[in-house]
Image: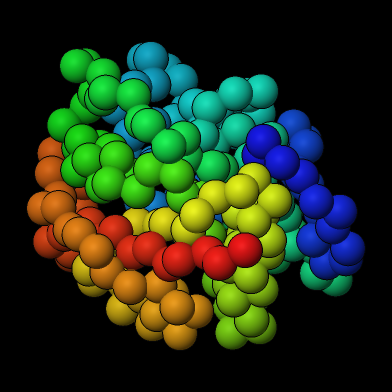
Length: 200
């Protein structure tokens, strides 16, 4: 996160020690896509979860712990937000981007100048306690701190529960792209970009 704000309990910024927990929550939020990708790139004999933990523990990259806020409830992590500001002018997509993530990159490119909610996830046993809405509210504070003009996120068209939450919080659909599954087992058909203006 390029700009930080002071956090009060139950929120805290992540540290490298949170990498394993982050990998879990990224797996939940991506509906299995992250683990599918980690499995495809893991060298022979390497646990795919190791790839996820290594990425979460890095200093840079979208899934870095430096872009992450954790929710601590009753002594354990309940939920997490991973997000960051998108530049006003996005770089062209790399030519070697895996086809499965091209639709996601295309949608992200349609939301320059926004604060992008990459991951919003809650452990199953902690759901229904309002952590998702609380983290979305916090994301907007971070968006304002980084002087973004709006918020953005991507959801699958089959994840109706998450979409209801986002729409209750003011997000609206602006574009969608067909999924490229390449062996990823998922009931959805499209990725959907939702955005929300962010008045200052």
